[in-house]
Amino acid sequence: RFEQYKISNEITSKNLVKHTRDDIIDIDYSSPIVSVSSDESQGIDSLPSEILIKILGFLDIDDLSRATRINKLFYNLSKDPGLYTCINLRPFYRFLVDESIIHISKKCAALQKLDLSWLGSNNQISTPALCTFLRNVPNITELRVSSCQMLASSVLETLAIYCSNLKLLDISYCSNGLHLCVSWLTNLKRLKYLDMAHTLITTSELLCLLDKMKNLEWLLLGSPSLIADQDAVISSITDNSCGPLKGIELWYWDKISFSCISQFLYCHGRTLVQLDLGWCLNIGVNDILPNVASACPNLVVLLLTAHHET
Image (cartoon, rainbow, N blue to C red; front, side):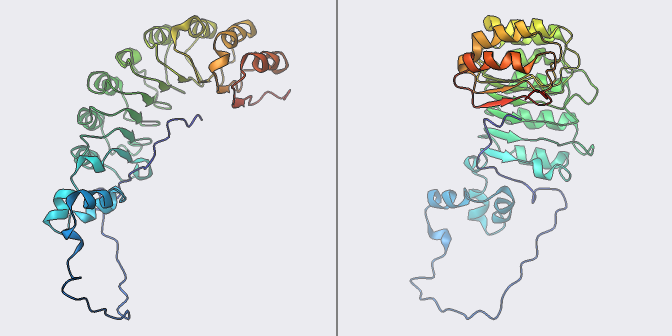
């Protein structure tokens, strides 16, 4: 999987899960008691608010939730929107419920990067709750909802209306047997990274999508179960439907022709740094490698899974 645009400084949430109990802290009563003079007894709350917020910025969302119970000062400081710019809820997909994510969203006016992958696998989060969350985060630029079972066309509609600043979107493995109305994504004019691997999208829908998205730099389209005319899609990308591509995943595109992929490499090869042709068994690896070598001088990663000639 391509891992550009990794979410950095991820904030996690386990203390906001409904009915989560506090951890038990063992106190060592054998430690000697140190006397403190009156001049040194001023607590951390005597520091300027700007410094305290900077310190709180090193805490994850679990510890921030605990900090709200220290006193009124920390309760107010812990609600600063700047502390909630990057959130990763993937590790807690088994425990989060509708009330949890709606409560979190109220603190996220400045949220920019969000990972909700795997949420809803236990039917604990509903589609309306996810839409409510997204309506509360209009400044978001990166969203990962891979394997979210509650993802539906209404979620994509909400994204198109309220999250127009999106630059990265991962909706891979979200089909759940349902057909998504991806035409809503054409409103995301600033999108540069799109992962739609293992989603149910037809040839005509994908062609329409590519025609509207002129700024795409990363395109992940693995396992296209409903794309009958694969050459038409690659030809559309070749004809500059997309921007200068840096990475493309064509995993299991087993119907594309050698001439079509060769033309694609000729047009976009100089900007490519990652290329996945795994399981594209209709292309002879010994035939395509010379083209890759000559057309892709900046290529860093080349995946040729299942090509036994390698």
